[in-house]
Length: 100
Image 1 (cartoon, rainbow, N blue to C red):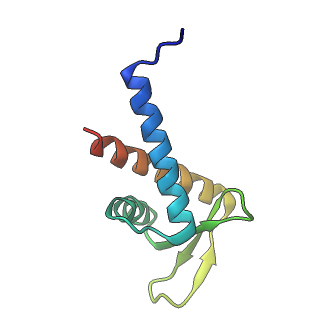
Image 2 (cartoon, rainbow, N blue to C red):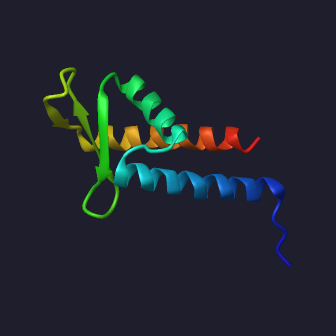
């Protein structure tokens, strides 16, 4: 018999909800207030407005929007990967706080 602790169950729920939120942001942009808050934190840290989208069906990519909103530039993959990790951390923190 396998015993799952309450902490493990909580962590599994946080990961599932976080993954769902990340998927929604990648497909449609941030929609819920929690998604918007997490994405805004990421933009504030990066210092520019960002666009996140699915990349060839696997993974995500980010683009930066200039101050005027007229130019969009591709963000290098290494930086996109770091942004994705930060966004995931923001989302997990938000979900965890909401579960209290």
